[in-house]
Length: 143
Picture 1: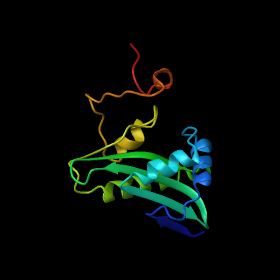
Picture 2: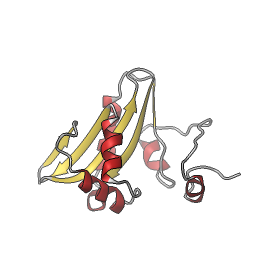
Picture 3: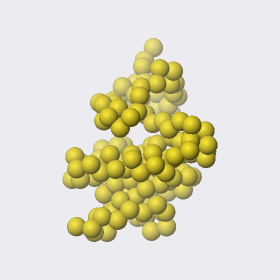
Picture 4: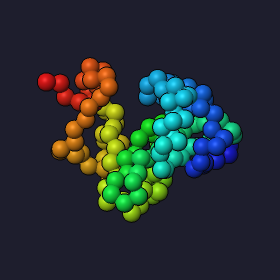
């Protein structure tokens, strides 16, 4: 099996990426949504195996102060073999020079990111479009 890493989005099949997010499961993100957010991200990684998209991630970065790692996804059949760790490492490497690199973890994944050197923030705050869902899934505290 041949693994290929891409850092540009010119050849990405956005429908395939949308399906990957759905089955991972990391939510329902349309192909158009993903094309837009990856296109607006300074840093992006896509991993293909034998031409099939098996992983992706991106970082919103300003070039100096902050890089926010987000949308890191690995196909369920490829989870547990270090690909997620490799994606975080590559996004972190490509974010070098920023004063801070941040991310938020899905509930239950905090330990994974802690092993990669990330620490819980005590002052992080967020507003979500679907606040009820964010509360129900444990992303933010309720009132």
